Length: 308
Ligand SMILES: C[C@](O)(CO)[C@H](O)COP(=O)(O)OP(=O)(O)OC[C@H]1O[C@@H](n2ccc(N)nc2=O)[C@H](O)[C@@H]1O
Ligand SMILES: Nc1ncnc2c1ncn2[C@@H]1O[C@H](COP(=O)(O)OP(=O)(O)OP(=O)(O)O)[C@@H](O)[C@H]1O
Image 1 (spheres, rainbow, N blue to C red):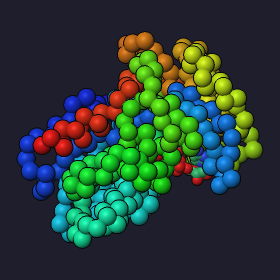
Image 2 (image 1 turned 135 degrees about the vertical axis):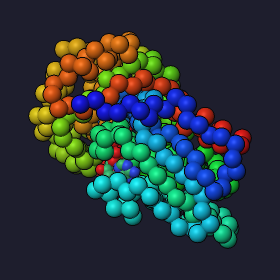
Image 3 (image 1 turned 120 degrees about the vertical axis):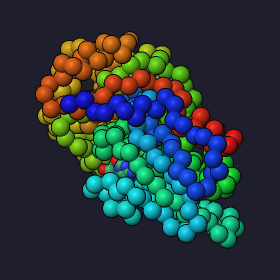
Image 4 (image 1 turned 135 degrees about the horizontal axis):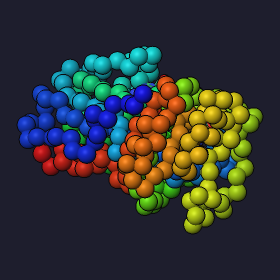
């Protein structure tokens, strides 16, 4: 089954009404890890990574309205995620605390809607992307003026993938994913397919079968195809659904898992080729076709809001 493509993020409207009292729409795109090397483990248990992030022109959409109440209300709950655990709510509350810490006596609230299309636990960074969108949007809507760097530091406490979504440029990342260097990988078309299973990030990072000592030099290779995803090595051992779909896709195109899975991205030169293989996917596999992009669509949306 193809996932809906109705929320293509090309041009989201931001008109000229006052910032308050109306909903503003923001994109919350997916990311791919074009490669993901695990190169060590820190004393706090987190893993040191080397990864290449690129965005997709496909993702969730958030609508945010400022309120006077000081409350954060998520009007469209996500099934299976309690409001207090939702990264959208956590990000908004964290920003309120940061505003109070810098001396603001009254911090407004917000009402938030989400149109969730990204599969959860898919390795597409949906939750982190939602958190980044909330941080950037409310920083403008609440007129807090926190720097991008400060927002990235705040966001890192919510998830290792939040900083790249805050900065919004495709990047090579080290550390736990927060030390970013801009890169411009080729913007291919991708078929993103989701095997019929969900994989928790923690289970991958705590597995004895995760390789943890990939040579740090490998990521410097000029040939991106020389790189790989270490998490995939663990996942295909434990999740036959992923192993089976990956070997099917590899017959047609270079294919690899993103993040800790379970989604697999297959690379094509054109949308038509990606759609052609999508049409042949085995029964019951969810999928979408999207373009890899080196700037997040969130950045121009925030810039337009700042100007309004
Ligand atoms: C795998 C990636 O998606 C690559 O982009 C990210 O590193 C994961 O980022 P994320 O989903 O935001 O993950 P977090 O919420 O920060 O971490 C979830 C859990 O994964 C483990 N974790 C995560 C990132 C990392 N570099 N090392 C880890 O060991 C930790 O046990 C952590 O408690
Ligand atoms: N707004 C949110 N959207 C999605 N998941 C959320 C959200 N808030 C909290 N979560 C929790 O975070 C978990 C991971 O969600 P997410 O969609 O970010 O996974 P992922 O794509 O595998 O991310 P990553 O690539 O960072 O590992 C979910 O299973 C859910 O319990």
